[in-house]
Length: 197
Image (cartoon, rainbow, N blue to C red; front, side, top):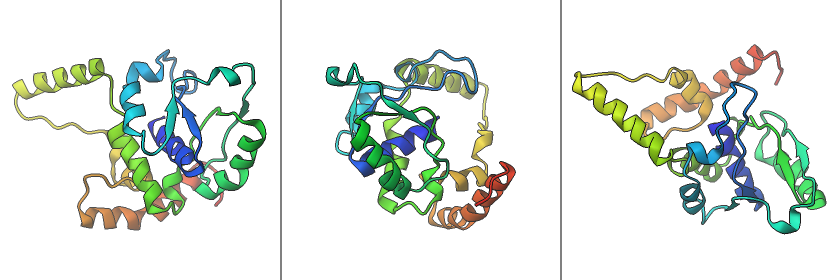
């Protein structure tokens, strides 16, 4: 869901949309009742993106009686899909609710300015709540007391880093390696899903 949030902030910026704080999917993967504000700092999210995207906590009263058009954006779409297909729908319906997003903007030749925004959202705007950060710090403190330790996030192997499109904290050489890997990784993932490019 984190990557989808990064993508939707980028789409909102690209099309000059106002974005409502995201609703998290509570059914597809696990039965978790958490809302966005239970995991991420809402005010930090809004404030840190203030110069990029207008983000509000809920729809304004004038739209409260309006049923939003609910749609799933087409997976693997570039920013041009949103410009050509989604923008006209917003102009017509005024409010659109993306029911599920896995657009993966990073793998579609996204302009550097938009890719940088995706990374900024991921590494700066999406900050955990103080209670989650405190729990993480407590765990690290306990681990440090017992000596050296290694933390491995299995989804961040080289192919997943290449797939994400983010190179935050990578050297120039690592960035070049990931950029070279990206097209093949994306083709492999699409083939595994039974789709064709």
